Length: 89
Image (cartoon, rainbow, N blue to C red):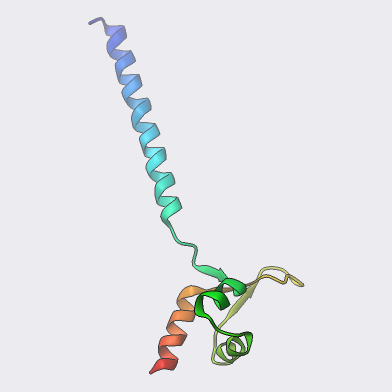
């Protein structure tokens, strides 16, 4: 083999490794679960009413509203789980 083909082989191998690294990073990023859930989805998942959600907020559940006047309300999943566990005891 000539020196040129060896360099080309190394470049190809490096290119493949870089591509694999990018794919692994993309897979890790995609597997991270978003820690917040929208109010409508929370109500549907827990099968609770807005009245019960009001009671949860009264017991300390925090809501997140991104902008003033925004109708989309978010809740942190871990906060909901820990509050439900606390109330169950």
